[in-house]
Image 1 (spheres, rainbow, N blue to C red):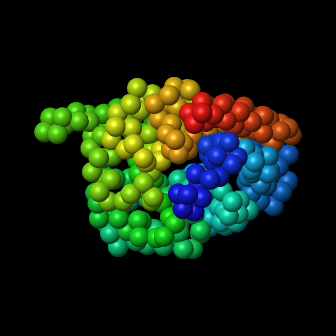
Image 2: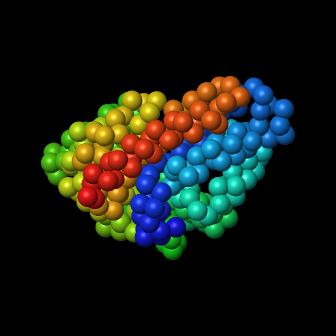
Length: 273
C-alpha cells in the first residue's frame, strides 16, 4: 500500500487506528477453544468487528511464532482474512546483516503479503536498506519505543552530536528512505518527545504504540504529532481485543474501537478545518 492510498483511507474512514492482533491462547474466551483454530477464529471476529473503524492491523509475530508451524499458518490465514483494504504490519522487529535482512524482507513482503515490517536499527544502514527496495512496502523503524526499557539506551545523550540516541536514529535513517517508504515507532508514553520528533521528521508517518493499556493519551500525542496528512497510526492492542473475556468480546472490542475512532475523527477535523 503506497502513501497516497494510506492517507486516502485515513480521511475517508476518519480514523488512524491500528488494531494490534497480539492474540494469546490463554486470554481468549473459553468458548472459542472448541474451534479447530481458536486464535484464527478470535482474530476473524475481532477483524469483522473493527474493519470499518481502523485503517491498519498489526499482528505481533511472537504470539504466532510461539505456536510453531501451526502458528505461522494461523498468521498467514489472518493476513489473508484481513485482505487488501487495510495496511498490514508485521510486528517482527527484524534487522540483521544485509543478505539476511533481504531474506526477511522477501518472506514478509513477497510470500506473506505484509505492507510493512518493524525493523530494529542497531546494526545500521546495511541491515535496514534491504527492506526498502520493495515498491509499495514500508520499513517501520524503532526509534523511541513505549516500554520502560527505552530509557536504558534510546534516551542516552550523545555528547558529540548533542542529541539523544533516538534522535540520531531518526535523523540518520531519513537518508536511507523517504516518507513514502519509511515510518518510525514513537511510543505514546513519551508525549513530550513529539515536538522534537516533528522537528526531525515533519513528513514521516509514525506508528504509535502505548495508547490504551499502557496509558498513553491520544489527544496529547495528536497535539504535536498530527500533520495535515495525518502522519500517525495509533496502535491499540489489549485495550480493544481483550475488552471482554466473555461471549460478547467482539461487541466490546467494537465499542472500544468506536470510542477511539470517534476521538480520532474529531482530532482530524480540528487539524484540517
